[in-house]
Amino acid sequence: MEVKNPMMENRILYVRLPCNPIFPIGVVYLSDHVHKQFPQIEQRIFDLGTVPPLDYTFALDRCVDEFQPTLLVFSWRDIQIYAPVGGRGGNPLQNAFEFYYAKNPLVKLRGALGGLRIFIAYYVELWRNLGLIKRGLKRAQKYNSDARAVVGGGAVSVFYEQLGKSLPQETIISVGEGETLLEKLLSNRDFRDERCYIVGESQPRQRLIHEQPTPLEKTACDYDYIENIWPEFNYYLQDRDFYIGVQTKRGCPHNCCYCVYTVVEGKQVRINPAEEVVAEMRQLYKRGIRNFWFTDAQFIPARKFIDDAVELLQKIVDSGMTDIHWAAYIRADNLTPQLCELMVKTGMNYFEIGITSGSQELVRKMRMGYNLRTVLQNCRDLKAAGFQDLVSVNYSFNVIDERPETIRQTIAYHRELERIFGADKVEPAIFFIGLQPHTHLEEYAFKEGILKPGYNPMSLMPWTAKKLLWNPEPLGSFFGEVCLQAWQQNPNDFGREVMKILEEKLGCADLEAALSAPIITKDKQLASVL
Ligand code: B12
Ligand code: SF4
Image 1 (cartoon, rainbow, N blue to C red):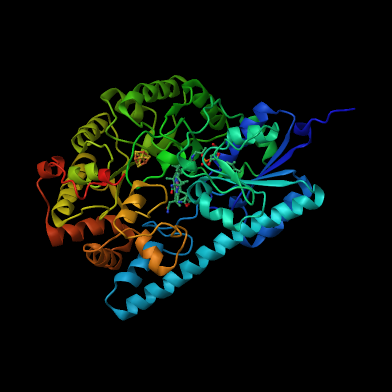
Image 2: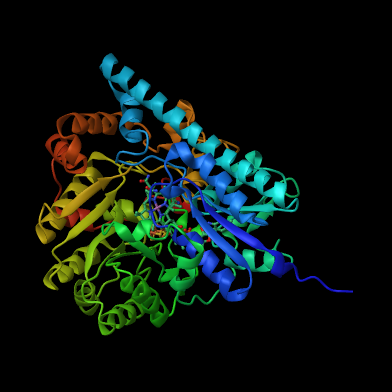
C-alpha cells in the first residue's frame, strides 16, 4: 500500500491580519523557516496590511479560492492602542484623558464622544479580525475539509487566553515564536509541548507564556524565495521611508515591571549569527532597501552582549553597505565608546531608550536594572562619536511611587539629555503604561486590590480601561490635567509641552538627586510582590 506523505499535500497560506503597514517580518520568517525544512511544501503570503479596508473580505476570499490552502497561518500583530500618538481611530490617550479628567463639561463630552468612536473602532476591528479568521477557514474547508487554522503573532502572544474564547474549535493558538510549532505540526509530530493550545480541546496551561521557547538557529532569510510566494512584496520596496525589520537576536533577560516582551520572547538571549544577519540585510539592500529596524526586544540587552553588537556592526561596515540607516530599541546603559563609533558609522539615525523615569529611585523600584548615571555617560560618548540624529526617550509617569520630587528628578534628567544631544534632538515620548497580562505590574495591581484576577485585559469598558491605562491616584488627576493642558497648548509637540508644564508647576531637581537612589522602603517595593 502506498504510504502518503502528509507534508507533500500541505499548502500553507500565511494571512497577516489588517495592520498599519509595518513590514510583516513574522510571517516572512515563518515561511522562510518552513521552506528550509520542507522545500516541497507550497506556500503563499497574503498581507492584509496592504489591502484597503473595504476590500478585506473580497481579497481574502479571492486569495483562498485561488490558492486553496490546507493550513491557514493567521498572524495578528497588534490589538492594544494606547499611545501618545494618533492611532487608527484618533488619539486614544487624549480621548480617554478628556473623558476621565477634564473639568470643562464640553471637553469631557468631546472626550466621551471621541472615546466612544475609538471604543467602537476597537471592537469593530477585533470582531472583524476574528471574522476574517473564521471566514478564511470556512472557505478553505470548502476545498479541503481538513483545512486548519493556526493563529499567532504579537497580539495573540499577549492575549492568548482571551482570544481562545472567540476562535473556531480546533484552532491552534500559539504564543511567541512559531517556527518549531509549525515544523512539528507539518511533520505530524506532537506539538502540544510547544507554547500553544487547541481551542475546544484544552485550556491554556498555567504560566504557558513563561515556558522557554524551543532553541532555534536562525539563518539568513531567503528573499529570492519570499519574493516568489508573496506577490505584493514590492509594496514595501516602493516607499523609501519604510524601515524593514531584521531580527538580530531574541529574548531579553530583564525584569522591567510592566514589560511582557521578556516573557513573550523569553529571558534567554539567543543571538543570530552576525554573518547571517548581514547576508539577510544584503539581500534587502540589493533590492533598494536602505532603512532597517532591528526588531529585537533590545538591541543590546546586557553588557555581555556588547561584543555581539560590535561584531555585527563591524560586519555591516565590512560588507560595504555604507549608505544605510537603522533604528532599534537600545538599552543605553550597555554602550562602549567603540560601540558608539560603530553605531554612528553604520548609520544608526534613530533609537528609543525606555528608561521610563529619570529618577534612579523609581527606575530601581520598577526593577529596570538601569544605572541612569551610566546612561548619561554613554549618551555623551555617543554624541562624541558624532551622533546627530533623533533619540526618543520613553517616559511613563506615575507607574509606582511617583511624587513631586521624583517628577522634578525626571525633568532634571531630561534636561541633561537635552544638553547632551540638543533639545530638538531628544523627543520625550510620554506613554502611560497600558497594563499587560503576565507582568509584575499586573501582580502588583492584584495585590493592591486595583484589579481582580479574572479581569479581562482586552476590555475597553471605561471602568476597566481606566485601570489598565495605568495612572492611579493621588497623582492621576494631576497628570490628567497636565496632559490636557499640553494637548490644548501644543498638540504637535505633546511630550515637550508636558515636560515644560511639569517644570513650571513643580520645578526641576538637582541632577545629582535624580542619579542617586536612597535605600528602598520595603512596603512599596515591587520586588516584594512576588
Ligand atoms: C519592534 C517592535 C516595534 C517596532 C516595529 C519596527 C518595524 N519596522 O518592524 C515599532 C517601534 C515601530 C513598533 C510600534 C508599535 N508596536 Co510594536 N513591537 C515591536 C516588538 C518589540 C518586536 C516585533 C517584531 O517585529 N519581532 C520580530 C518578529 C520576527 O517577530 P513577530 O512578528 O512577533 O513574529 C514571530 C512570532 O510572533 C510568531 N508568529 C507571528 N505570527 C504568527 C502566526 C502563527 C500562526 C504562529 C504559530 C506564530 C506566529 O512567529 C514569528 C517568528 O518567530 C514587539 C514585542 C515583542 N518582543 O515581540 C512589539 C509589539 C508587536 N508592538 C506592539 C504594539 C502595540 C505596537 C504599537 C501599536 C504601539 C502603539 N500603541 O503605538 C506601535 C505601532 C505599530 C503599528 N502597527 O502601527 C505590541 C502588540 C500587541 C498588543 N499589545 O496589542 C507588541 C507585542 C508589544 C507589546 N507587548 O505590547 N513596534
Ligand atoms: S522593557 Fe526592555 S529591557 Fe525591560 S524587560 Fe522589556 S524589553 Fe527588556
